[in-house]
Image (cartoon, rainbow, N blue to C red; front, side, top):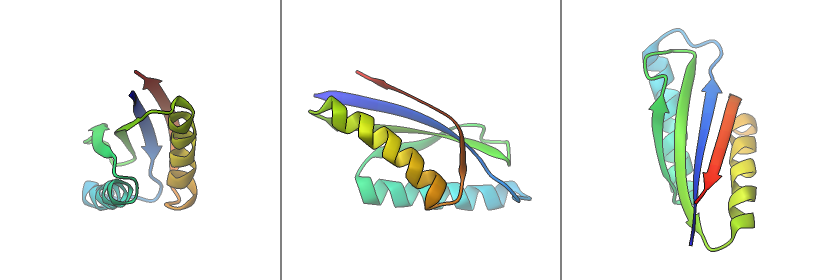
Length: 93
């Protein structure tokens, strides 16, 4: 069994308060958790209203599946949610 740990740092544009940011982050986390059955959490930049970081953990027998999933998730965050991923990294254990 392989474990993917992925980190995405995401920039928000035209956000004026932490309350606005938190509603966007909460929606993103809930949507991705339901759609992909993954463990996901906000993991950084909690007090910054322009940037947030999420960490995702998922499992698979297939390393290539995990690599493709990492790339697919980044694309979905950018295109479906209109957010800008400014940094992403992963490791497979």
